[in-house]
Length: 114
Image (cartoon, rainbow, N blue to C red; front, side):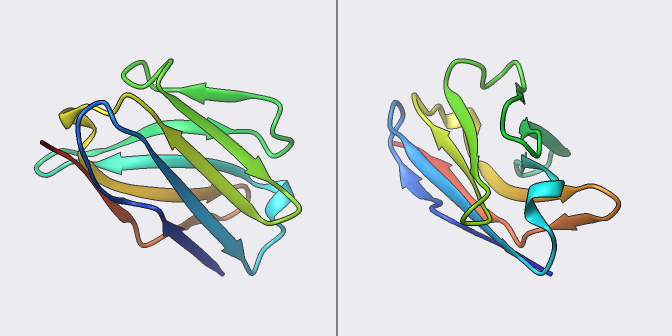
């Protein structure tokens, strides 16, 4: 099983980034996918979650209206489009797959700074 995140980096406040998470080794379209983040000195928090069908998504209040989660079950990939980024969005972002099992990616760093 692998979850490989990509797309992180350094961006100025107000900018955008698109994270991707490529999955393999399990039946992707049966798993709820989510993005979580962990800032230095803080606990891990759920940012966005999408059902296996892709029809329902939930967001943390702190990112509503700025972030959009989506998935492509033909490519076994989940995305996180992040717009209007703020310095407080700086964190390591992790991809998670949940069903009977619980899988995590290795994380990708997002830094929002001028």
